[in-house]
Length: 247
Length: 319
Ligand SMILES: Nc1ncnc2c1ncn2[C@@H]1O[C@H](COP(=O)(O)OP(=O)(O)OP(=O)(O)O)[C@@H](O)[C@H]1O
Ligand SMILES: [Mg+2]
Image 1 (cartoon, rainbow over the protein chains, first blue to last red):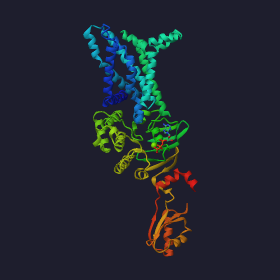
Image 2 (image 1 turned 135 degrees about the vertical axis):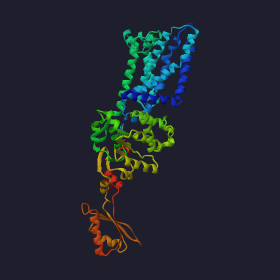
Image 3 (image 1 turned 90 degrees about the vertical axis):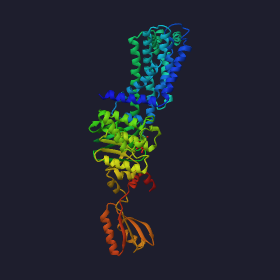
Image 4 (image 1 turned 180 degrees about the vertical axis):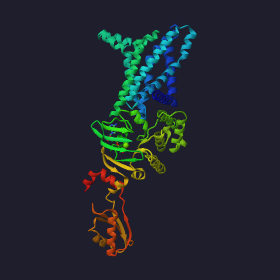
């Protein structure tokens, strides 16, 4: 009964935290500029001559690599730095509610950023007639990807009270999750390692699972993968927080 | 209400809290004293459920803080050391957040915020963000948060730290007033505070309880307690000394001059104390024909007791 009220209160506070500082607006502007830049310039949106958002979504794993840890690095490290974690965890709130509330707030923020890219979608519909089903699948995949990265940032931010360290570690982990299934890397690895091994590693990569969303396929296995990454990272967050208190 | 039994909390190999037991009932204000690093804050963090105990048991209102943490936490209001607060929130936003987590909503939330703001006198800074508050106001904001749900139990870690003298006085009075109905634990380094607000005192040193009693009982442990101070113009210090020595453990001349002699006489340990000792001195004075201008029984001072209890090694070394 109290669970949802508690999660909501924590979520509301956290979201408010984004918007009371200029950080949120700076973040949103940078996010939109970068998506635009990658889509239209690097991604050759116009030269492709096709009505799709492939050039838009392709860049998301790389864009999120830096932007998502930046959005998530403060979640717990700030709480530890200020000492407010002591307040939060002595309230009649379970650590779970706090973790989920904070995570959902940052995820909602990322989803808001994603929603604000709608002009790209309008543009492509205005220029041609794309398969909007594919585009929706792309958005769903992108949101899940952001969620997975965020959960990882949540975990690394619980590990340290220093936001910079939290940011760097989380970029490293996310980078690993990209490279493990990034075609240029896997192609290189196959020369030395057992292909089965390479494939197994690649199965843990966000690239492998993100690709099918871009092709318009919402496969349950891919959804399960992202949800599992979030679940695992948030669970670890709980363990880390518990560890600090146990001393 | 609060029951702590054989509580131990270790950090690595360090025993921050080493087998502490005590209890606090409603209507009691328990003062926590002890040198820096004694384990006061650590004990409070275990009581409030922030740290799990290494061993031992803590129950709050009958709920074990490890097994039923949420039920226990509902009953407690907690002011952590250094009064943390969310830097980017306004005072009002912060209190509203605290109220929501305490399960307050709508009208009862509004009333609770209003009351806490009034009690802690925060009207002037209600819409200021916490990182722009002065230290004292930050402290009061966090204090307001701890009483917002009118809890039956209050755990306050150095509640008057950083407050100006007027505010210190206010907060002490507030603690005393709330202590009539609530069970309160608070820690402090200000000894007058203990005398002003506490019904009981515990002194902790290196994780262990080294003294436990009412402020009066503790003061009685002072060497000064029961000593008699006299002043007279009818005899010299040397003469007084000669006659008093058989009665006293030791005598101390406080001043000697045109205004006469002021002297403090310490009773022999275990021998007659307080009024009895003073009476025997009055008797002696009558026999010797001294005219006493003043006679006063010393009360004992907490700071002296505190020092003698928490600095035994240093004192032994000096002796
Ligand atoms: N999280 C922690 N990790 C390791 N050691 C700790 C931790 N918290 C406290 N300690 C140690 O436990 C001991 C007791 O600390 P505590 O904060 O309880 O002291 P205190 O009585 O509140 O002191 P003060 O009067 O300075 O506030 C100290 O030696 C401290 O270094
Ligand atoms: Mg302390």
